[in-house]
Image (cartoon, rainbow, N blue to C red; front, side):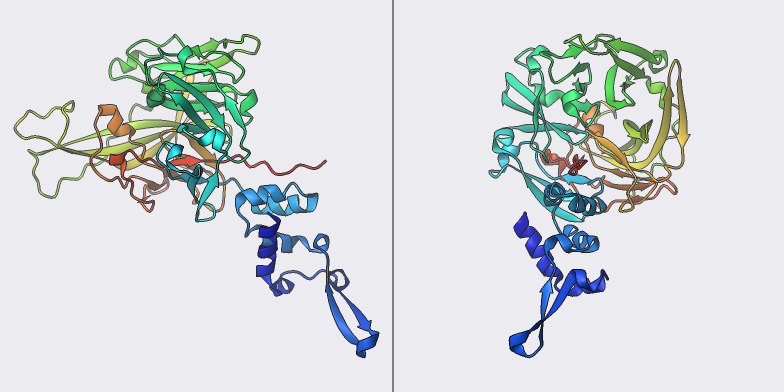
Length: 453
């Protein structure tokens, strides 16, 4: 890291004089050389005498990991690093298996800095591991054989690993657990002291603490309902429920769960019914330009995500147009496998949830200074001048195709930015070949800057 610091300082050259005007005697000293007839020798100040704005110029040229290491040196460096380091937003660029990269590096695009980077992971953690989710700066991975998968959490910045109970405590050993992981959610950034919630195949919700020997399964959901998404907010676990039948009969519910260890407080679980986003207007569906209405069926669907924003729980509804080509020799049926299908994002709606004894849902038209990031695995809300306000940054997650059991057969352009004020969508993020199973995901690394008392 010191080598990196040296070259960054060297690259500034003498231009730093124009950025700072500390007392001259603190920067250079003049002394006469008796042997050289009064020649003036310029002596630069030592490292610890450089002004803070010079350090800021140096640190802003360093990669994130080097900045974190530099913050541990002294109070002055920590202060300069803090000015340069906001919450990073990474778009992970990978297929799910880290073993494909012989160097065990995590590839990402840093939206804050506009650069592609690679973070080297410890070989013992990354070798043979598959990523199935992320939450609050932790990657959720599995490794082992198909019949004996061991999940664990990894902080890629610090390298800390936290083992979770084996999947054999949830499902039979002959089931491929990694393939049915829907989502993982952690109650706090300090994962060692948190509650971990995971949903499997939409039908199973399991909770644990890292010290537990087994997962605790929630048993209170009827067979015709599924878990769409889960999110911790203010210490409470919320689960959004969906079903294709009898939506109006499901009521808001509150449950208390005691985990396997039994020596900690119960976890409060609140189930949010699908009726909470009733009255959503379907999108305006454009006619196919060839007018071949006998070949094309048009429909729409809505997908729910949950985000914690400033201590409040938000439900974000993604509304999609569906264009699908049918075999005209057969009767059109939504359950038939189409010849061609494409889900196009039409708009988003944001609802604020207030839940105590009853459930109250309010539609929002403004996010104030917040920017939301959503995908099928994680979500986040931040206030950062580097990103457009009152917007939703979204990534293609293939949930719409999975809902019908369809295999995508086209490259997707359904990643971008939705502007809540005027409904405008910018699809400037790269197209994604979801046919090959590639998925980009948001990741929000934990940044722990050195602390000095």
